[in-house]
Length: 211
Image (cartoon, rainbow, N blue to C red; front, side, top):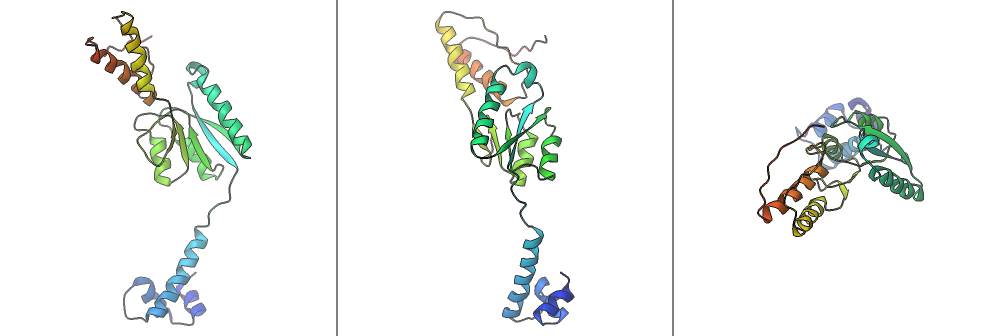
């Protein structure tokens, strides 16, 4: 709506509308409120919330099909069962590293109502972008962001407990096999492993190997 149209609808001059919108110049309180109320109504029309799609995106890492074992399969089954019970459908997309394009495309085309990430990275750009947009997002894991819904096991404590148990059985030489340390779950497991060795006075060093 133009200034001229607003002036005509409110029965005031164009200069009155302009002063009310800019906050400059003398104008009656009641008139200013009428102008601002009309302007706010027009703004809300432009920002109309899209209708619900009934879809949720599940984001799978591209290597899940090679190295994920049963975890991602079981995770996806659980998500599908719960979504179906609540009359939602699942759309699966994959992600490599911090490539956000697949998720971004679904959001821009209004295809989904929320996103579930099945694995997170340190400094995860997908999570940062979704949180900044205030777009509903959940993770199977843990992240340092209170906006994100998080469901996780304590991988760090589990790794520490397992290593401590092996030490109690008399073992003293260890190696921990992980793939990409950029993944938060692997970093947590490594930290728990190292803490157990440190607490028992067993020296360790970071020595990555390539297979």
